Length: 552
Image (cartoon, rainbow, N blue to C red; front, side):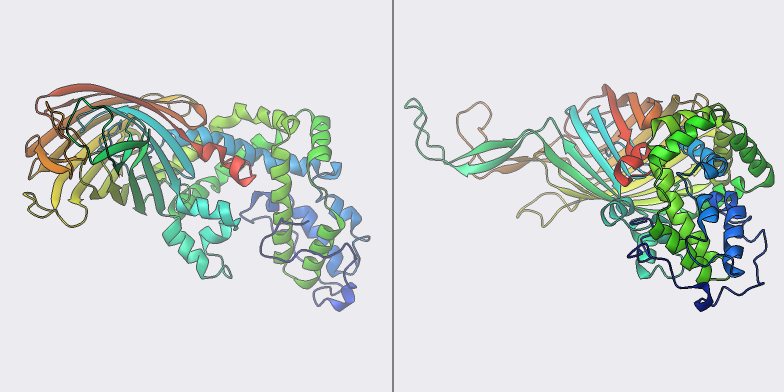
């Protein structure tokens, strides 16, 4: 079937392959054990192991020479054929239920950073966390923590590897697990792209402008000639862009350590028995499933049957056969997942979701421990010098007792300092920490998270304010032709504390509500009490919209 296996050439026609006598694996009397695939880590292979074994042995003993001979065997592997109904139920029920359950369980993660950095004019967060969006997230925030003026920001976060896969269509499993034969690109994806996250923040309430030369006067009442003016060019502007590298995040489902922990939990005999029991006892309407399979599942056409037959003939171990079948089955499940009738039947699994949620939570508990991330931000505050901000993020998860996160950061002015500048290259240094804990149960579709944070920033010099060319001097009608810089505020320590409740709704929606106190802001003296609120959406729950698959 075209497109189901990226790394193998597709069959050019539906003609039968050469007779088995030409294939070295088809030797009469030699068969494979009936359990050659029953311990395969892929559930669909374990479920279909009996039919795959019978087909492989029929080929090896010479009973099957052409795809016509293999019709009965291959019909049992055809997702659109009623002969495969029982196995389709067993193979897909657990995976589809698990996918839905994990979308809810993933809400309990305390390490994700979806909002903008603490220096943004409309952020709701005092710290940067160790994790980020699995695929893509979008956040809208309003308020102010370290800034003088409240603002509104939009933040777009994405993972470099997920975007790369989306654009190139490469096989994620191959790239993530360093399978032999995947090439050097696999290592680049695993250790560079997979751990890199990009975050862009836009200030929605700030105008961007450009300076243009002018001549003449708009009226004859003012004798002063104006040589330039600041012209607004947009209602929103890029205020910062960040690159984050996760040296260690065992909670990230993309990480090998988390996958190892989850696999270990799922393959425990007690858990395997529980999953099997659920999968085999939840369906009552077999006829509806059969109709959905006929309508939505791609049939095992002659080209695909020929590929399976050739795999069985040329590899006596059966490895090529199960790999080829897995490629077809993955496409079939993706197609079935889009059929509402099929989903309605699979929906009966939801009553057993606690089984899978418990497995997920056990995996998280196994992965609990230290997390470490480094972040670089190019910060573009309005009417202030641009800065380079470097942040180190350390977090430790205490399982059900919550998570502690610490930040250490330094901010450096961008480029060469203006001639005669009375300040140095260091803008400020920062230390901050936050405690997070889920207040409600972690198994519900809506959860509530409590966060308590503290932030300390030290500036060796007052903040620098850029006054652009064309600005009129206060109290006069005289424009400032070349622009200037002024110190605003005072040097010293800035302290901020914050208490925040984040409502985590279903499907990746997060709503933070916070109150904060600060002894001053970047430009103004005097203590300040403020409120921050926002909304973010984590698109990892809608991965299928981008990849054509079914969710996580």
